[in-house]
Image (cartoon, rainbow, N blue to C red; front, top):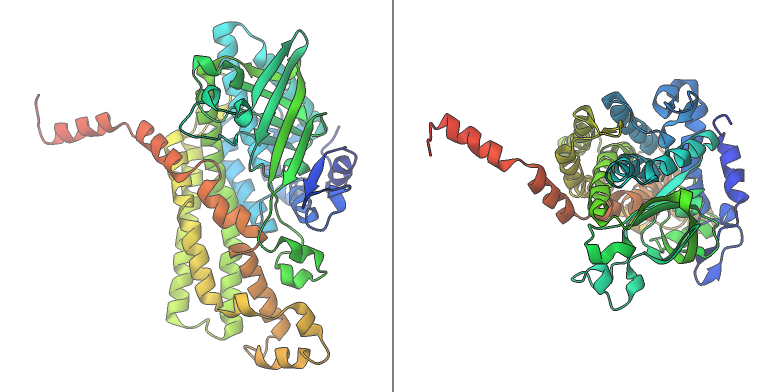
Length: 483
């Protein structure tokens, strides 16, 4: 099968029988729901851009397994060039959607599981790597969107998975059969789950021998029996139901999160990639986290480009574009954004091959990248809000602007620069609101803090990778210290 078009992708999701719930009710047609559809449109962009000649080099590549052209989101990195192009592709998509386009998690899971399943097979003689390659090739041939699921609810975080009062607070194997396993539990904060064809499940922390049932990785379709999703709330989400695309800020694109329940889901043997080999759970987590922390040096930067542009437009519409402090704030926003991008490119360029043959980023630099992402977007948002002004959060609705009586007053008193319509001024302010406070903030500001692991998780990895003893030896050599 050739690369899917965006429309073919939409129809392929429509044809699935997913169990999706929101606001206490089952969503009968998630593809057509006004709250959920913008998130589907964001994923569609990953298919649409792959069809455009000018983006082919970033969006597609050649599979080393089939020799065919595949979407880069289904690719296993073969070089540092692949790693760099991944980051550039993510920045492009952030610029085109100003939202989370959701396929990064699956791509990062592909690469982490590829290398780790190889290592497990080498030690234990299992067939996980062959299972995974078969699954990977299927995804490439069908051009599927894959989600990755790592985060468990965790319950009491002072206790290991096997010590929890409720054993289901970490996803686990509850039955082992000759033909496969049955799993029970949940995965939280799952971005784009309802827009994916399949999900790769991974453990969320390093495991001890007594946690054997929790050390599991596998792939299943999203319409598997026993699997269902509860959609998370977002700020301003019901604005999408009001019929005003202006009030939404970014009416076409978005992202949604889900609590995904695995209520005794069956997994066949050929879809299992880890099953009880506890010493490899932490390895898989570390690799996935590294890849995903690299991703933030691309996607968040692309969305940041849009926010910086929106702030510059707002300054023009407010008549303050020439003010020195406005120029300085835009420079600072750009400096912070490009610093994030620099880290994403650096950890990619410094990548190296795994024993399995795919390439992994420099883990230290990837964690530095994500540590910066936990800080810089917040400052970029703060400066954007500063430039926009208070009207960003106090402006009347589009209904007031269109009203026969109220409209003329809104037009008159919310006018900025004379050559700019009040409507356009309100539109750019709504976009900034969306990026800093609304539904897109989930995929930009707040996700910058907790996505791909908390700030402390990155600091732990930075400490592990910092090679402090080597640095101490350098200092002692320069100081001519002999011990």
